[in-house]
Length: 127
Image 1 (cartoon, rainbow, N blue to C red):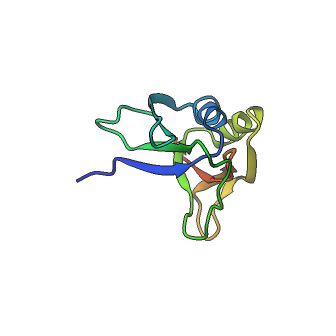
Image 2 (image 1 turned 90 degrees about the horizontal axis):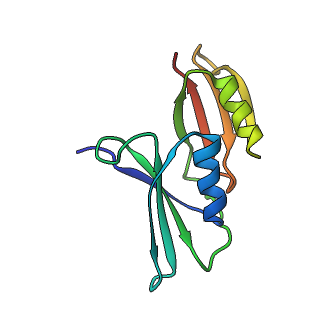
């Protein structure tokens, strides 16, 4: 078994695709409209779905926003240069909610940002 994808619901699919591809450097891997169900699925990631876990962005056409809930934590992404990754997020209208620095009770350098729908993304520095 292996992890295939994580699905998150988004209010504005074009805005979300732009954020994940432009601010985070992922690729749009595939996109499919389901008119009878009134939703669209878009898959984004850093590698091919055959070998890498990806993110499924689900857009229900009749829903503009969602409550994020208390159970979801964050998506984690490895970054060689967290400061540059945070700058890129800012350049694309994202929010940095925790500046780069060592994690509490440890030495790993991390930062947190929010995507356009408010989902939390953690950058973990990996040289």
